[in-house]
Length: 119
Image (cartoon, rainbow, N blue to C red):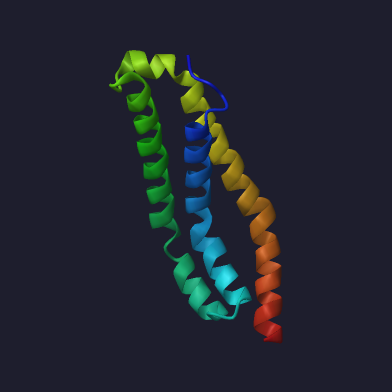
């Protein structure tokens, strides 16, 4: 039986959540540090769809690798046995994504706007 707190499942979910918000967070960090301007940051944000697809692929591939590593194969029985691992990946992905989008990115946006106006 899988574990809710397996490092691989938590890492996979967290990585997917972070990757899915890179299109918004990375440009803002670059604006804050003065590397790029707000216009360039908006252009990078246009790749949100591609990064979301890439993050979902990352989560699916990571989950598959975790199950395959434990059981040597990824069949329906292994998936049933690892339902907690799959649930952990999904919940971690959602929590990280919504935390970054609803808490961290608004703070970054305020800071980036202040940096672009003041700098």
